Image 1 (cartoon, one colour):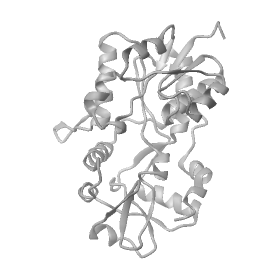
Image 2 (cartoon, rainbow, N blue to C red):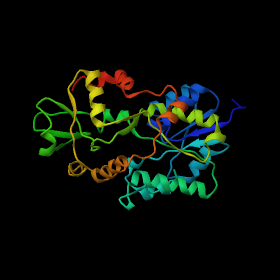
Image 3 (cartoon, helix red, strand yellow):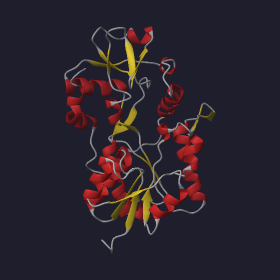
Image 4 (cartoon, rainbow, N blue to C red):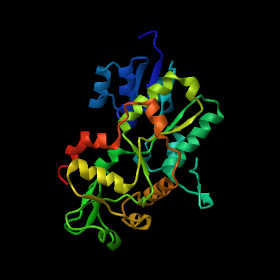
Length: 302
């Protein structure tokens, strides 16, 4: 292990960091230093058993970060906007504004903070590559899980139920399941977050090719109706695009709704996400249909 370069993975027990840590451990090129706030949690213990050096650090504690990064060749850094809903806090943690739309800047704090962090690193001369993920397939298991049009017509987010408007229910029949993603007929980029790790490993093995670049990732570019059709085919359920508008989605009333509306408005501009380069970096990255086949049991109760 002494002759291997140390690569630090922040958020190593989370979705993105966990994928990167697992891929690096499987590849074996680097010594993996996994960073988490709680080294006793089961995911951290599993990383240690798999061969990672597991250390405790907090993005709000500068001294702990200095210790975690000591002697490292490089690091995978990710921040969690959903933990605090603060762009300012995310920038302070050091993990641009989105592209112009309709002649102005579209504020999506979850993206803007990371963009400003990218600019900061480049201004101070840090060699870095930015990997920009699309919506995860896994979001369909949680926030954007298909819902059944039954018992009052509602849309649920987490443990909360929000009534949907008449325009949405008009496209559904009783017992239909629906996807409420306000994209209209514009394709939405998606991929499995578990496939990020293979992408990062490939980038690290070819630094001269990727340093300084922004890499937009995607393994599928489908409309909501096409995603729904694949889900229907795999699960045997009748799942439809609810055809919800941005305005109706924003009126659902859950915390963060306005932020998500701007996120989808940004996605409608078709940001640069490249399926070919994603599959070049990780040839094993899953198509949506393959991911659905692996996860269809999670939808059996629809």
